Length: 405
Ligand code: PLP
Image (cartoon, rainbow, N blue to C red):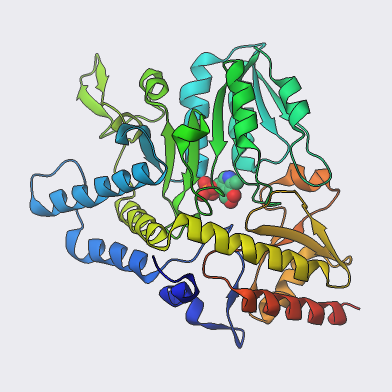
């Protein structure tokens, strides 16, 4: 097991100065940095193995296919899927959720049916459902959150009826860091036979995820939030459901036989992977899984939890800071306001001091509306952060407070 304190040196981008200061990167919830092992795996493929997958008899194509399919096996193992057929490689969480909306929901839904989500969701777990509701006449209904930024479980449960055909819920809120009570939510939904999709974009990078133990039906996540390249992701789905779903996109690789009269679709998981995929990115994604596992998910989780507690305590002690999102269970993310300074102004000032944070609505406008804010400043953690990073954030905030006084 790697020593977590030394992991930072594995990330080349963290070894630079920004605006004259050593970079403090606190925006991993948007996109995490990549370790050299991931960058090298992508470069090796580009230099030595570049070829298309699944369709060549030559050596380079075999090598590319082996690396690409090897990544699928690693991802299957990471989330404990029952079979590699259940791992659909996508461009990210957004595409994974759209796939479920169009392939699972669209043929199933009609007027009177409902899709249930929570108020905490990222736009990726809202808009695809709105689109499919428009297409089918179904309704989107939303479970409220409390002032801490937690889903009101009893109210969500009250909305679960036999009209609800799918429940979409995040594992961890990217805006507030709330860890949702998935077991309770899924158990209640399953009692009524409701299909459950979990948006795991902020779950898999930070904790052990076992999709079989969770008991959901679909789980979506992105490579670039877990040290992999952008444009990579996974939809995990139960094989039985995936078998019954029609393809989402048509094209090469997703077929067994094509004539002008009839097309026979390929078997799982290829049925959902039309066209040349992001081969280089997926190989990098596989290397990212190796990296995560070499550090150990439990190790990562404990490190980030301890650092999150440190960050929250330090932030709360800054004069004028208001924490947005104070859920009893949080992971790796903290949103806040500093007096009435606009988050964009604050973010720019922090950047001048080499501290990278995210500002704005975090693609979760309903959450901002719930708190009556245009946006927040958000610091988010990954395994390479440490207490020095937090101390630098706090010092930069103190300076910003004086500038805006
Ligand atoms: N869901 C959550 C909770 C997210 O944080 C994000 C990205 O910020 C997404 C979905 C969308 O992920 P992607 O842009 O990789 O598809």
